[in-house]
Length: 315
Image (cartoon, rainbow, N blue to C red):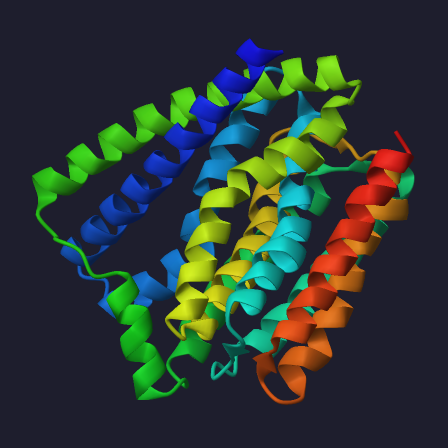
């Protein structure tokens, strides 16, 4: 088991490094091609940090471990809403100036409910996957339009997120390095995760839901805590909500379009309802005083811990 832990930890490190490199490379190339720093920053803030999870899921699908990929996609959402947002709020209350966050949270709850409905027959088909992907395209358009209505101060912070050199050769090298890091990182995370699951008596679904989803989120958790301490609550919430929507709409939708997927019964009865519960708990926090306090962060963590405990009890 020590060897499996070592490969798993090394894979997580490579994913973190590859994720950082790919965000910089994509941002630099996008701006080189004429995309405004604000638009690049907005899209990268919302979706860029999900690329390591995407790499893991692609590797899992390649190995025909669809349940691990599904577990990672939905488990990452629960980790985002409960662990990442909860720990960041405990580090410092998260002030929310962005008006787009409440609509994004509502969309996340609707997307989770839609996937539950799609999975009532046990499958998510190609047409249903296409609906999810269409939702993702509409989401990207909504973000770009709504982002223009945010305050100049917030737009400046988002543009600063994309700040990087735009040299073509440098960013092509960044992307090449990122692809290599993400490939081997995903390979060793899946390999080590499956070995750990076998040693601990966990199914591939639970491996994706717990060790893989939590492990791949740790760099994002650390970044969120640091951002919270710098007073960048909008950046933390933007990442959490955008990443969660990317997981459901783009990753699960893309998987279903590629090949109809069998949705585990527990997704309709436990995991997706848990994600909806977390969204409902978060809604009044964002809607009332536009901040997530330390006490509210503790509530999010408690709900997340209750979900993890329930998953382990039902093994």
